[in-house]
Image 1 (cartoon, rainbow, N blue to C red):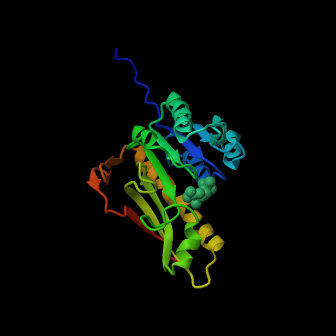
Image 2: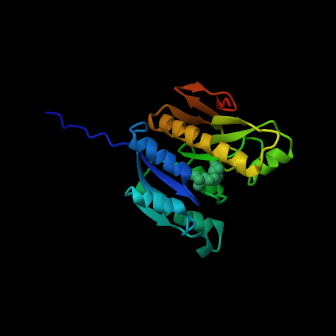
Image 3: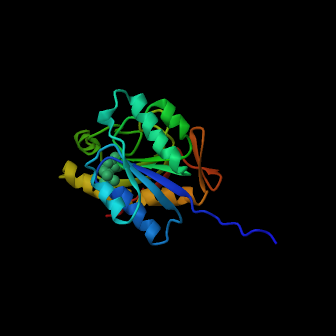
Length: 223
Ligand code: GRF
């Protein structure tokens, strides 16, 4: 008699630095059965990150790799990699993880690490994106989920949420509306990946084997 094969759910390791609201959104999608996966570990570079409490509250193991205790990006990334690889995840999710990663690190996880960035990439890479979009007179802003490569905020795009900028918008108001959309698009991308539907192929992203447009899938918010 053939042995029964036990199919393990895809394992996810999430890296955070702060509030962990994107992590929370993914946790809820898993709890509701929308994403069929398991978060096996949450790692923060910041010991005070509120997201650590969110993970611990639902019994997800947590670890802290405090970047201030390392004298180089390389040694910090090596320790981070050691923790992640011990968990043997299929997917690494950067969820508000505010560290620049070395090429050795990003290459090691090529095609299996996703990030969310609060702008319509390639516009406004880096920090303070909402204030910069308003100052530039942009009419639209948003968020992008992309595969991580060695180029900061530069990997191939999976999905973007497009949010209109109002005339009297403040950076905080806009950030709040963009964050709401992050909580929609990040779980979608994670779900696709965990279902084996999403892959990185050089500079392209494929969904169900079909190449996506260069901006990824567009999720337009109607107000
Ligand atoms: C989000 O806008 C994320 O895109 C950015 O950090 C913000 C906070 O995220 N990189 P979270 O609440 O910690 O998920």
